[in-house]
Length: 307
Image (tube, rainbow, N blue to C red; front, side, top):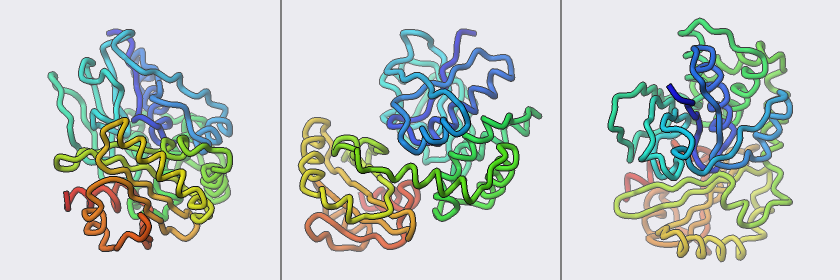
């Protein structure tokens, strides 16, 4: 078999990159020529984790079929969130914790999807099932992914399995879970030097909802109002991105990781669906979403329902 490329979704977060690294390492232990790659540069939080555990960031790719046909997907399955030529590649396996949508293959594959808070929680199970030990640096990046996706257990997506995996991986990585976890999350809230374009692209995914394309970006912060001092510029850029990319609706979810609330900024059409989904009234394109921190569990499902 030729080289296999392992990667997460576009605009990768810590789980997309951490899961790719750990799953590729597992495949190499099983005798496969697997390489972790990424569909974008790591964000500040992920860079912090990579540096802390002395890991190299995966190389960034735009296509796969110019170097191999065989790929493995982690932390995503929807084709619009994947590499540009994914439909031309042979998908050997998927390990994911999201909904399954807009996905099909010509050949049978290994598919592992579980309703947990993080893909890396599932990958830890795979290591155990294959009776392969997790080395400290790989444990560290997997731990970082779970902390990130569950907001250190504050997210409603977090399950007891995620918590147990975190404690187990923290021992292997030899870190204090709470201290490291808070430092990691704070590293991801450093937005001062980010341009408007970077803020809207840090962690953004496109979703097909009915006959509409909805772009949902999320940024974590410790001060929502600080981000919203740039509201006019954010709105202008969101309108431009809608036109350039044929998005019907662009939503920016600004999440305070300390109090676990979010502010929603909505640009596009139909905004009445947004108000219906969250039972809010938009004021100057904004609405407060109390207790909302998870795009996967608290933002996408209610929108999908109303669309």
